[in-house]
Image (cartoon, rainbow, N blue to C red):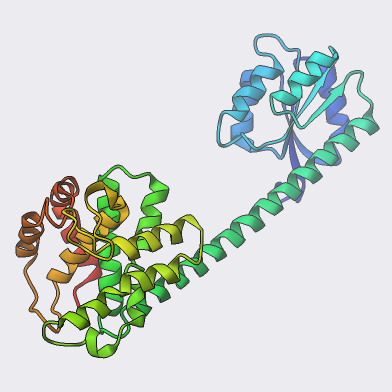
Length: 342
């Protein structure tokens, strides 16, 4: 729609001058009109003026209406503009093809002014209603994503609220996890899930006593058993949802303390039995823990931390993922700088 004139824009395409004049007369009071007498000019004008509707003759020299429509639908800028076919060569097969090509309406010559105006207006009403619905859906989707991110953030923070580490560790290691997933060849959508899911890896710590979480020294055997329960607690919380994001988050929460050689917890599985999501988080969680000060240890340098991860390759961690992690060291250091240290 032209915002200055508040009128819809229509592009009329026909190689017959008389048809152009007639259609122009019919729509002169309703639309801001543009005309094209061949397919190439039509394609150029469609991109340039972005009409609200295209009224397109099928039988034209050089390039017929079907080819014009095909090219319009193949270009992002014009793909969603409704196309109304007009033809004097009407038969069932032609009409069928018109709709298969993406036509919104099919009108036969000779042109009935009242009928053609009604059909064009109906097409625009439907098209504009569809656009309004799409805008509303996009708006609601954005709102849902914001709610989801807020919920994820709260679950991530909940797992660390008692041990004092809070936001920075959560989002640093989540960022590292997404980088490693990308390097491992994950699909874009799964990488996005990883960044959110990894932040919830320690959600289960909400069920662990402050005395254990904040103990400055080594945990005794009984305390270790209580601490290890955070994996199952986290899984029980996160597995309440069956969405792909929370399925991944539950998987990570349960298995991120498993070891490549089978000496981890809670199940003692080994190698590729451990979900790759958890194998990734196992590396990034330990790496970030090494680089910050905790009640039971001093802060390590990044170089020393990378070296320690390398030493644990093949025992604690998947050796392939360790190699990939070491290969993206510059990106990890950038992330460390971006999210800061505790």
